[in-house]
Length: 94
Image 1 (cartoon, rainbow, N blue to C red):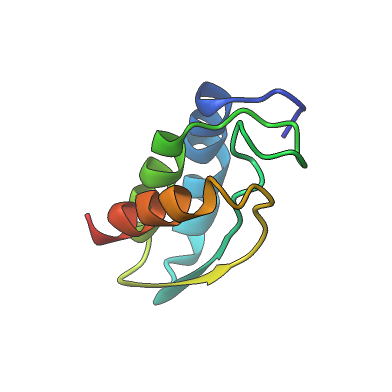
Image 2: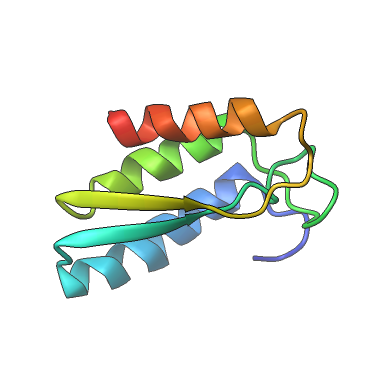
């Protein structure tokens, strides 16, 4: 994704690229690399995602396969990580 991309750009990419690509495979299980460096307060990626974006991405990912697994990856602002993980977990549970 381009620098300074935000929720709208990610939502469009998810709908136009990710969901159709995964749909062609019809997986029994989907593994997610759950990285949080795209959050707007993270110092690394220069991406501008909100907390809500992580929740809806997890929710939509969970809808793509009957089972889902996630592995915690990046995220370099330790003040935002607990809330980002919680938002993602909430999305996976929906």
